[in-house]
Length: 63
Image (cartoon, rainbow, N blue to C red; front, top):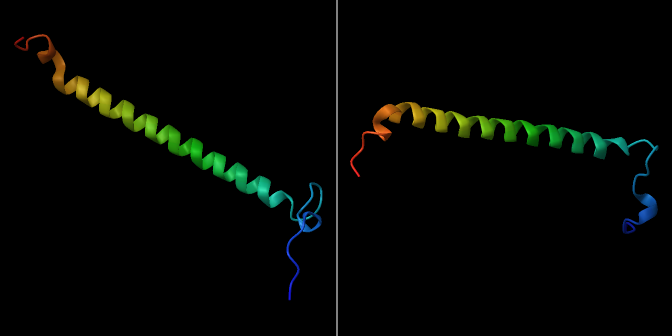
C-alpha cells in the first residue's frame, strides 16, 4: 500500500522536477496571450468588414 502524498514529497524550488510547473505555466500563458490576440484581431476584422460593407448607406437610410 502506498502512502498518501505529503507536503514533504512535493517539489521544492531549486530541486530537480520543480521547474516543470514553471515551464507549463509559462507555456499556458503564452497560449492564452496568442488566443487573446487572435480573438481581438477577429473582432476588429468583423467590425471593419461591417463598416466597409455599409459604407455611405448609413447616412442615406430612411428614418
